[in-house]
Image (tube, rainbow over all chains, first blue to last red; front, side, top):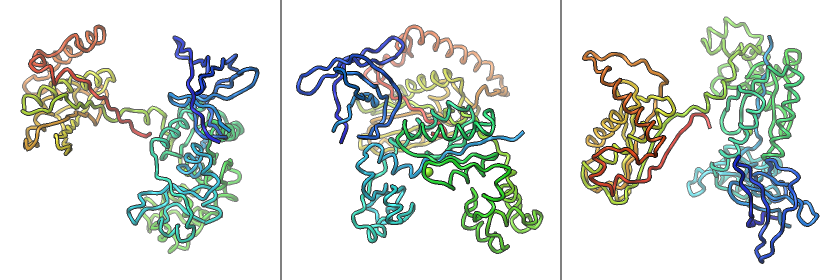
Length: 77
Length: 408
Ligand SMILES: [Mg+2]
C-alpha cells in the first residue's frame, strides 16, 4: 500500500480555500469530484504521509484525497 | 490557586515520524541513527519492535546494535520532517492555551490552569487523540500542578497514555520513583545524592533542607523543592518562542565580484533590504554578521558589534564593509555575500553621543522610514542609491531572505 500521486484540478478561492474539482488519472481518465464531505488535517494511517485530507464522493463512492504540501495523493491498494 | 500544567512527550519521536511517512517501517526493527560511516554512529530513536523485541535503546552505538539484531534497518535522520511535525504539534497545543513552551522537538509544556483540573485531564486525552489522528504519531501526557511533575508524569506511562499527578496522589506515585527520573538530575547529581543515602524522590523530599544546602548548595535546595512539588516556574508564553532571532539577506551575484567597489555596492544593496525588514519588524540589532563565499566556494563568516542597536542601512553597510576589508585577502573573486543582524532590541533608548550625533541619526531614521513607505507603495525598485546604477549587472539581483527564530 502506498501513496499514488495524482494530478488535480482545483479551485483556489480568494480567501485561500482550496477545493479539488477533478482528479486526472495517469491513463487520461478524468474523475469528477461530486462533493467534498469533510476536510481536515490528517495523517494517512494506511499509506503514510500527512496533509489536508479531503473526503470526496467520486462516482458515488467515498475516497480520501490528500493535499500534502503542494502535491495530491490518494491511498493506493 | 493551584495551577494545571500538561507535559506532552511524543513517543520515539524521530522513529515514529519515519513510520508515519512510511508505515512499512512499523513492521520491522528500525532505528533512526547518526552517521554510519563514522564508527561512532548511534541510535537517535527506535521504533516499538526495536525497543520491545531487541531492547534497543537511544544512545546505543550502531555496531553493537547490529551484533544483537543484524537485520536492523537504519534510517538516516531527516530533520526537515521532524521540524514539520513538531511545528504542527505546536499549532495544536496553541489551540488550547497561549502558554506553550517547547522543550526540544518532541516535548512541550502547556498551561491549562484556565480549564481547571478535570478539564485539563480531558484536554490531555483530546491532545493525544488529535496527535494520533492528525500527526500519525503517539504521545504521552503528564498532568500536574507544576512543570517538574508534569514532565515526570509524561514519562510514567508510554506510549499514548495520560498520567495525572495531583496534590493528593503525588506522595504515592512520585515519591517511590528513583531521583534520577527527576528533570535535571543527571548522573553526577544522582551520585552525590546517593552518598547522602537518597535514592528515591521521596528520600529527597523528606531530607533536611538545610543539610542538602550544606552539601549541594543552592542546587540542593532547588531539587528539594522539586521533590516536594514546590516548583513554581511558569510556562513561558508562546510568543517568546516565535520571536525572530536574526534577519539576513544574501545573494549570489550574476558575475563574480572582483574589487572592493563591487563588494561595497552589493553590501549596500543587501543592507537596504535587511534594514527595511528590521524596521518592518520594529527591531534594532547590535551584532552584524558578514558571510562571504569566494569562487572556489570557500566560505567564512565574521561578526562585530556596533555602538548602539541599529536598523539603519548606512550603519549596517559600513560595519559589513569594514568587516570585509579587515578579513578578505582577495586570493579569489567573490561569488556570494550575505549580511545578517542579531542581538535584537525593541525600541532601544538611544543615548546621546557627546557630539550630538543622535540628532543626525534621527534624521537618517526619518529618511529611511520614508523610503520604506515609498517602496511599500511603489515597489522595491522605485528608489535606489545612485551608486547602484554604476553596475546594474551585480546590483539588480534577487536577494535570498533568511530568518531564524528561537525555539522551533
Ligand atoms: Mg519523546
